[in-house]
Amino acid sequence: MTRTLITGGLVVTAAEETRADVLIEDGRIAALALPGSQQWTADRVFHADGKYVIPGGVDAHTHMELPFGGTHASDTFETGTRAAAWGGTTTVVDFAVQSRGDSLRAGLDAWHAKAEGNCAVDYAFHMIVSDVNDATLREMPGLLAEGISSFKLFMAYPGVFYSDDGQILRAMQQAGDTGALIMMHAENGPAIDVLVEQALARGETDPRYHGEVRRALLEAEATHRAVQLSRVAGSPLYVVHVSAREALAELAAARDQGLPVFGETCPQYLFLSTDNLAEPGFEGAKYVCSTPLRPKDHQAALWRGLRTDDLQVVSTDHCPFCFKGQKELGLGDFSKIPNGLPGVENRMDLLHQAVVDGHLTRRRWIEIACAAPARMFGLYPRKGTLAPGSDADVVIYDPHATQVLSAATHHMNVDYSAYEGRTVTGRVETVLSRGEVVIDRGEYLGRTGHGAFLRRSTCQYL
Image (cartoon, rainbow, N blue to C red; front, side):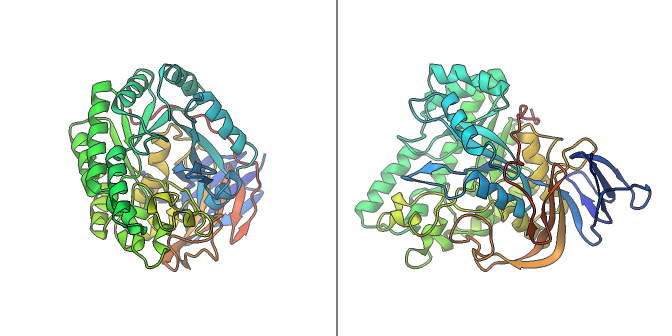
């Protein structure tokens, strides 16, 4: 058994801020106490004076090695989880994918094979259901028993991931009966496909048109429809990557009625905009993701939604594709640009910048980045907080250090940064995962295979 002591820091959780020493034994938080009040001895001592001591981040939406548009996401579980650790995230929940015509089990087994023995931090899976039918519906309870307690459906991407309203209703009914959570990509895919075809026919091929055809109203319409289907089914609903104020308004209206409806947004929608999609040449391709970036005036509504708890979680939807050779597949046709942005390494720092800028309190930062995703997906209090018995996923965070985000210094396996040249205040100093030091003062001390698969319970907000 090893003992680690973190002393002198300001412990910040979603519930409170307090100056405390943190004692870690055998991979778990053993105790917290007023500084100097206990005569603890330890094998290893970290002095956190002037720093925050916070839970490791929980990124509940990543796509490592995801096949998409004839290529695949450039981060592997090895590189992606290492980058997550550099950014203070110690748990990722990735998406196992059912291929059309195959079973859910085959998709889950394939993702276990990708991740097992390769992760630097702990990981779990959601299940993407691409093919809703009698057989896959029967599989859902068995996966739930294995700790796969959330299932993602798509109202977009006809022919790839798309489910129609009848399929969505059936999956929601099954989720409602078993306690699983349905996650929804809410965009009206068939309508978007019409607008894509019309734009290309007019010669509108540049990356900025990706945002113009994926209309905010089509995100809002799909969000409204998903809410109503979930009401009919008696099922909870979690809408991923909310980007538009009109879609947020649908979630807020549902929550005002007391419905079990939840929402997530991502840093790209809080910090980037259609101005990036419109960058000259083909540079805008770097920012193609779905849902798309919106005009800047949507950002205020999203920040407000985070403060009012109409949005509960900030995840990254980390799905990186290199500019050279991958994003370039869409030269001359924006519809062929692989959809996705890198961000798993930047989330905690960008959200701390939001604290500095006055958008969020410190405790709300930890709520949306650590505690709420852990509760939403059945991992709390093992993850997402610092309390006796919790896993010792701990970050010592320097709130005064400044850094410049850049592809030259990040650790994600992608050749550009979506936040290139942006200066942020705050930086990870030390990261522990289950008590093991992964990052310390600019040095990577982790190891491939340390990360363990997490069996999740059901959503703890229900």
